[in-house]
Structure formats: C-alpha cells, structure tokens
Length: 305
Length: 254
Image 1 (cartoon, rainbow over the protein chains, first blue to last red):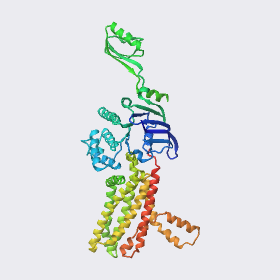
Image 2 (tube, rainbow over the protein chains, first blue to last red):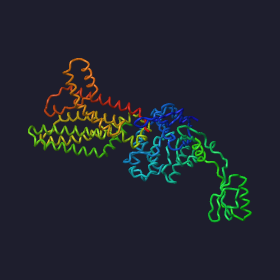
Image 3 (cartoon, one colour):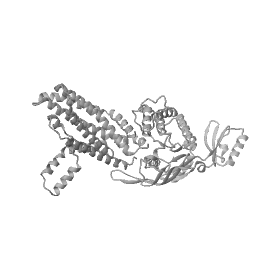
Image 4 (cartoon, one colour):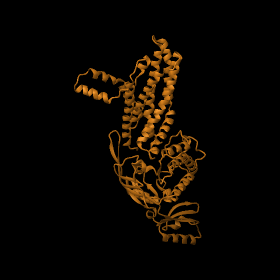
C-alpha cells in the first residue's frame, strides 16, 4: 500500500517574544501513514500534535526534515488538492451561512457550478445540517460548527482527511455520528489522520496510533500490537456477603447496601471468590475482566517520559 | 477563480465594516459642505466646490484604504480563518492578491458613490456634467489602489494599529517627497545629490496622481504625464504587492 503521509525527521523550533527565545517543539518526528488507514495521533497538551498538523498543511515551514503527502512536499499547494482538513476549533466567516461557506470553499477548489451544488446538498445531509443550512454560522452551536467544518473538509472529496480534535465539544449522539462518518471514510478507501483527547474513540476506530510527548514520537504501531489482551484485574460485584469475608482475595472498592465491589488481581483468586459466594449463599451480580486499554498505555507512556 | 473567491469574500467582509459607512458619511458631508464653503469664500464658487469635493474624495478614500486595508489580512490571522483557507490548494500569492482585489473593489464602489454625490453637486451649480473631473477622480483612485497595496503589505506582518501608522506615514511622505525633486534641481553634482536622488527614487511620490489643480482650473495636461503617472502607479503597486507576497510566503501561522 502506498504512503499517504510520510514525515522524515521533522524539526521545528519557535522563537517567540520581544527577545526571541528558542523553544523546540518538534524534535525529529518520523512517521508514515499508509493509504486507507485510520491513524490516531495522541499526546498531552503542548506535545506538538497541532504543530505537526500545521507542517502537514504547509502552514508552518519546518526547520529541518521532510513532509510528503501522496509523494508531494507539503509546502506545495498541489499537495493539498486531495486533502481535507478540519481545524481544532473551526474558525469560519460567521456572517456566512453553511451553504455560502461551502460554496466559497468549493470555489477554492475550482469546482464547476453543477458539481458544487450537488456536493453541497450531499454534504449538508451527511453532517445533518440541512435544516440549518441557511442560518449564519454565528448562530451555530459548537457541535454544529464542527459539523460545518467537517462538511467543508470533504468538499473536494479528499483521499486524505486530517482532523484535529474532531469530537471535541460534541454531545454523545453527535460524537457517535461523527465517529460513524470517520469509519465510513475507511470503507470508501480514504485515509484519516486524526488527533483526539478522547482515547476511547481512538481505540474504537483507529488502525494505528502514534504517541507524541515533548516533540518526539515515543510509541507507534498497530493498536492490536500496542494494546495486549492480558487481563489486568477483574471487577466482581457480589451481594449478600460481607466485605470482610473476602480479605486477602481482592481489594474492596465500595460497599453499597449488601453489594460489594471487589477488584481481584489474580485470575486464580476469581474462582476462590466465586466459591466463597456460593458457600455463603450470596449472589454474583457482575463479573468483568479488565484488559489493558489505550488509556493505560497512554498514561504509562506519558508518565514514564 | 480562487483569487475571485477570496476577493468576493473580502468585499463581503469589508461591506460589513461600520467604519466604512462612517467614513462615507463624513465624505458625503464634506462634499456637501463645499457648497457652504463656496458661499462663505470670496472667489469662484464652482472652483471651490470642485476643490473641496475632490479633496474630500481623496482624503476619505485614503482613510478607507488604510483603516479597512490594514485589518484585512491581520483579521484572517487573528480569527484563525486563515487555517481553513491555506489548508486548501491556494498559493499564498493568490491569497494576498484576492485580499487586495477585494478591497480595491470596495474602494471602487465607495469612490463611485462619492463621485456621484460630487458630480450631482457640481451639476446643481453648472447644469452640466464635467468629464475632466472624472480624470482627477480616476487618478485619486489609482492612488487609493497603491495605498491599499501598502496597507495589505503592512497588514501581512504587523498589527492593525502599527500598520495604520506605517501606511499613514507612507501617504504623508508620498505627498511631501516632491520637495526632494525641487532640492535635486537646485543641488550641484556630488555625493549629496546622489543620496537625494536615491532617496527620491525609493520614496513614493503620490503627487504624481494629483491632477486636482489642473482639472479645477482647466489647465492643459500633456498626455505623456497621464501615461507616466499611470505607469508609475501600476509599477509601484506591483512592487509593493510583490514585497507583501514575499513576506507572507515565509510566514509561519502558529
């Protein structure tokens, strides 16, 4: 499979302030995103995620290194012909309606009139803004702006979609809808590169992830390789047995009425807990093994770095 | 197409700026007040109306170009709308040219409206449309185009307040630099003359676009002067825009 994005030893130092003080933001980023995959780019605030995206879009000139999009340098406007971008907080001309704004972005791609109208109608329906299409954007909620932003990112039917925090500010229903749209991109053969603070979303839809901390990639790989199937502990909720009876078998997390929530670390002890409940004529309410999550990996990586 | 799209959105944006209408109101007031001045002053009333009217169009046009122009590019950066624009296959030069043309279009509409009021007032006194006045207005507009380019240049790397001050300074210097030409005529050869010549070559001479006196007093203007002034305006504007593109191309948008 060809590479949609190839970043080689990308470095950037900002010099800001009246007496410019160098602040290295990217310290040699190297990563590759293959065509057709959904790639999650994670990192704590200030790690360099948005700066990497700005280098991809040619908004920032790298000090060193190379950034290619479908084999073209990101500094060339042609590299953005097959790219769609949704910024973190979509900033648009708030006096325009979504329909006018989409028409404007279509003009920037030089779309013919008939194509333009057809695509605008289709995108407004895709993001669920048909009824608000003629309202000025200043009257939109944050979630609606995010949808308008997603629509403008898709106006050129891009092969690569870059989304900076696409799920921020959305309600749970809206988040699910956008998540479904992103997953559909994969079915259509599009490549998605996106950042998010909501790790469950990344875990749900990404094929591969990279974790950036302090301007360096500290972990990269397929989600299945990074997140193991190993059971970390098992949460057991039982009723009708006193918490003290489980001493040594597990950690009692909470007691509510006659219900006890236990955290059992060894798999062998789970059986002993169940035997004890049976012997004491108690009742098993729930049992859920907790495997490693992306959040665990992220927290561990960031803390260690 | 892309430049036209940027110009269109710039025109829409400028149209929403209340400062534009405030300046237009005062310009209209200034043009109308020329009638009052004509009554109060000794001399040819029509000439005074023409003088004050043209000065109002020029003065308020310059203020429009500076006050709207210096905020245009800065606003895009400050409001971060530029992220959405430059993430499209758009050359930064196309962005600058679009912004420039959008403002030029705004000024064209404003100048046309001010001129219509001015010609109506002159018509009320002379009962005829005086075409030569349009020549003077045309060159005022050319000056506004150049000042717009200067405003866009400063706006591409500075804040609106500083840009306004720089653009205003450019305009003032431009209207006073003809003094250097006088000095040159009286200076003998030497290093001083070379320095003054170099300074005169670099500094703008906006008096090249000032045909008010000739038009108001009906003095003859050689066609070569029209042409040289026109070429001067076009070349200087192209130079300033080139500089703006050069600076803007190297900018990082953090």
